[in-house]
Image (tube, rainbow, N blue to C red; front, side):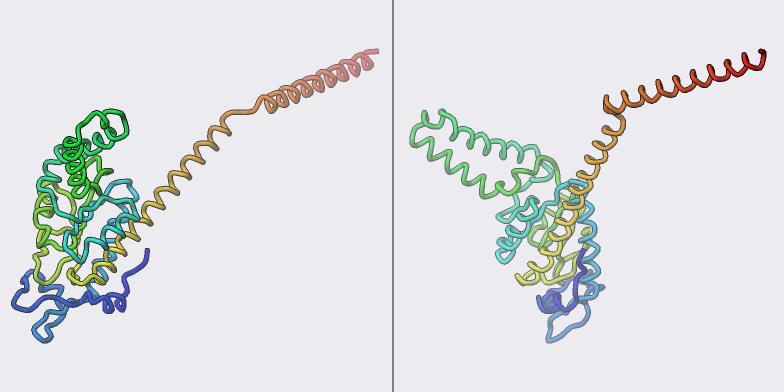
Length: 283
């Protein structure tokens, strides 16, 4: 797993915080200094926290569970959508639907409704609808796709939540905390790190900073998924080998029987030789 490099974090501008007057005192352990009225984050601590978060996400992905990414701010939407989509993880980039975690069954019903509309368009029932009904259903489908299209494969609650800006996504963070779901987050100097399980102190406004950190998390997830796949393939081959060893082929069994018969014949010959020798001695 690649380690976070100090130079890469510096080039991406991960160290730039907010104005001093906007800071949150709970972020003091992660602040290195103040320059021109702006707080500068300690990138050494950022690198350590990134590695910890990447290792934890790798283990979650290796176990086969899902990680939900949340990033609805303008500069993060496209980046998160592209990077997270490559590792087949669910993400929310439009807006957070209230109760998505705490009222998950209702969200699943909305997703099923979207799939039912898709089935309707494929069978003959779609042609029986009027133009007005088709237009209403199409608009409803587009609205659902925009909000829930990226979480169609999320059939159960996620094992973890990754948030780009904890202040903007405070509702999502609150729902995850209520359900005991671990929260990974990029936390800037104006945010409160309390309640966040894995804090990554970094600039959550710069697109390069978001791209670097989310990219490393996705790389770790991809590594975990590949290890899971290789382990499952190894288990499958081991099971096949055990089955093949436990079952002998008929030809092998026949060979064993023939060998046993040869041994018996040799033993009979030896017994006859011994009997002949005894008779000769008696004579």
